[in-house]
Length: 329
Ligand SMILES: [Zn+2]
Image (cartoon, rainbow, N blue to C red):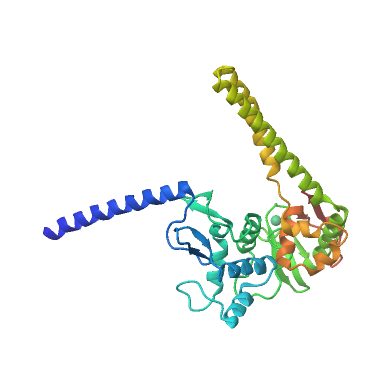
């Protein structure tokens, strides 16, 4: 009896504490401050803010750079351990799971999650938001070998589509060597080597033609930003007029209804970004850059530039380029 009462009181206390902690987290989230344990790469400043740690922040940035360059987790961890680099709390040695978990965290991009929603945080990012997005897509690629894979992943596995049923095509071993095969219904098989070669050549040609696209995109983004700023200033003026009684509330509402969609559209245009892996390729050096690029980065490029469908053809060893359909995005 007594034990049950004690238990009930304790549960009540716990619930109470829980809701207090929850409220504190919500408040911290609203203000963009850190809650919980401080992440590797940061330290608490004297006034309680999360600031980059002089020793560990550069290590986080190094990890990001090496993953973006296509290095395997295994080789990164080996190197960190060999160098005796300080490890995150609770780990004696660097391991691939830890690095992966760290790099997937939005914390380093200056973002925080609260109840599943990402919001900008007040702390300084260690990794560029766009780089963070690319790293996430690299690390969450289902075809990625997370163990000691130094063997290259196939260029198009999981990317190319079956021309018969539309399902993903993946790597299949056949007597002639490696092939792409329809993963679900086994409709289509194609030797992978000539397909990879054809797609590579098409991408190189495409990127060589796109000289100056990066500058074009930059100009567009700058234009869109200026446009959004101009429209916002206009709206502010109308708000001031309404506040001064020179404009009725109904008129302001009408103006707002017209301007807001334009502002949003301009903001959306300003947010368009060419992924770094693609930006790197554009121009006359496309061939050299493509050849030096790790397969993982190449896959990011392919995904961003082209849709590939492989049709069924006559059986036989002859490669028919007509069966590979490329649709530029
Ligand atoms: Zn199929």
